[in-house]
Length: 472
Image (cartoon, rainbow, N blue to C red; front, side):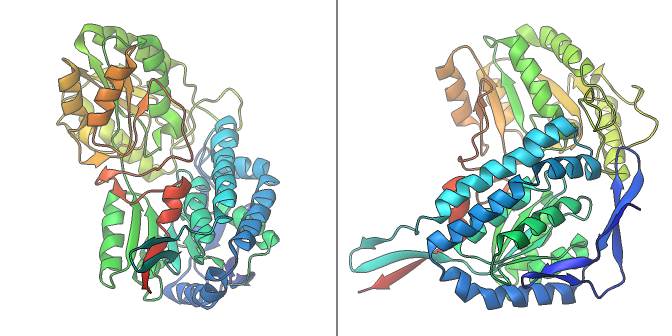
C-alpha cells in the first residue's frame, strides 16, 4: 500500500473520515493495490450537503468577477500540478503517460480556462413586455463522475456550476479517486469560501445514491452508464429535482466511397482505441461502402497492429490496460459473442498475446458485424472496433441511426457538402467531418439514451441556471 487517504473535503477544510470502511485503489497495469480512500456514507453526504446549502446564498450572490477570480486561482493551482495529475491518472487508470499528459491533464485545464472567462460575465437579462427575465443559480449541485476521464469529467461539471453560482458536492468514481484529491488540494489552495466545494468519496450505492436522493440537492449532474443514469433519474424524480445526464454511446464512423480511406481508417481506429476504448464518444462502429470495404479492413488491421500494449509509464506503450478485472471480463465476453454471432476476426481477438499481468485486452477489429447484433448495439467500453458494410449514403444513415444511443459520430468524404448532408441526418449530439478537431466550447451531450442536457462552453453553464420572470 503506497497511499492511504483518510479524509473528505467538507466546509472548506480536510476532515478525517469517521467511518472505518475504505475503498482500495488498484493499479490496473500491475493488479497491485496502490492506495485506499474512505468509503463514505449517507451521513457524510448529509454533512457535505449541509455545508453547501449554508454556502449557497453567499456564493450565488457573489459578484461574477469574484467567482471568476476564484476559478482563475484554481486554474493556476491545478496547472502547477499537471505533471502529477498525469502520473496519477496513469497509475490509477492505466492511460499511457503521453496521452494522460495531453488529454487527462491538459483538456481539463482548457475547459477550466474557458469558464474563468464565462464566470466573469453576468447572465444576460432581457425584457419581454412588462417582464424582466433573469437567470439565477439552480442551487446546490450533486456531481457524480466516472472513472474513464476522472479529472475532465469533474471539471466539466464543477467549473460551470461554480461559475453559475452553485455550490457543489462531488463524488468521484471509487475506481479512480486519487486525482480528485489533487484537484481538492488545488481547490483548498485557491481559497474558495467554506462549503462552496465539497468532496465525499465512496461507492455509487452508498454515496452516489445518497446525493441523488438528498432533499437539499437541487440538481444532480451525472456521467456514466445509461443503466446507472436511469437509477439516478428515478431517485431525483421522486423529489422533482433537475438532472443532467451524460451517458453511453455507440458512435458510428461513416466512411463514404470518395473519402481519403487511409486517413479515415487510421483516425477512426485511433478514436475507437483512445483510452483503451474506454471513451463514451468512441467511434466503435465503422461503416464503410462495400466498394472499399476489404481495403478498409486491411488498413484497420494494419493500424491495430501498431498499438503496443504495456506499462503506461513506458514511452513505447500506445495502449494501456482496462480499468479493472470486471471490465476486462465484460469486454472479453463482448468479443466472444461478436464472433459467435458471425463476426469475422480481422485483428486481435481472444487468442492475441497480452502482458501476463494487468487487465489487458488486445486491440481487436471484427468485420461483417450484423447491425442488429449485440456487438453493434451494446457499448463495449474496450479496444474493440465493429466494421459494417453499407451500400450507399442512405443505407449508411439508416445503420448509423440504428442505435438506442446518440452521443457522437463522424463522416468522411472528399465532398464536404455531401458529408454535411449525412451529418445533419445522424441522430446524435455531435458529428465530426473529416477528422475535425474537438471543440471544448461547443455543446457536448447526447440524443436518445445517451443523456439529457449539454456540457461545455456556455451551453454547459446554462444547465446550472434557471429562469425567472419579474413582472413590472
